[in-house]
Length: 120
Picture 1 (cartoon, rainbow, N blue to C red):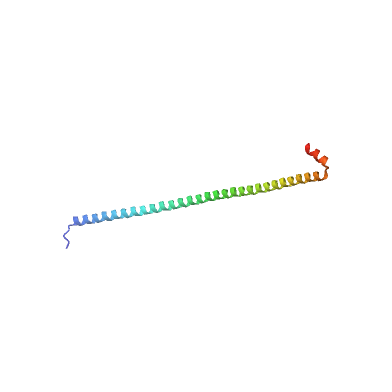
Picture 2: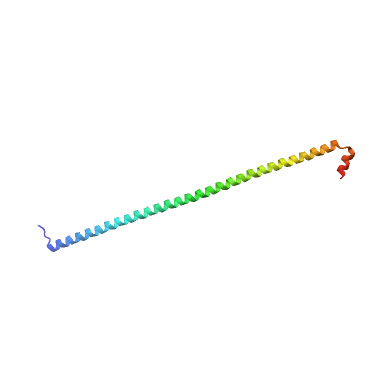
């Protein structure tokens, strides 16, 4: 037989009920905290993915612009070389033409005419 009086048994029941309530509240708090932590982590992962996508987009734009500039510089360099080549060829043709003209004048002119032409 139990030696506990009904008052003592009621106290134990109340105490057990309070303990169960405390345990229930604690579990709800832990669950709520876990849910909140999960939401925070999920939000942080979404924000990180957004930042990464934005960074990749900006990097792609920078690389694209750099490629365009490099292509422009390459084309400008090629055009400059072609122009320099054309000018060199024209200069060489002019020099050859002048030399040919001078030789032609020397050979066809009489010594008196050639001398007078050179003196001015």
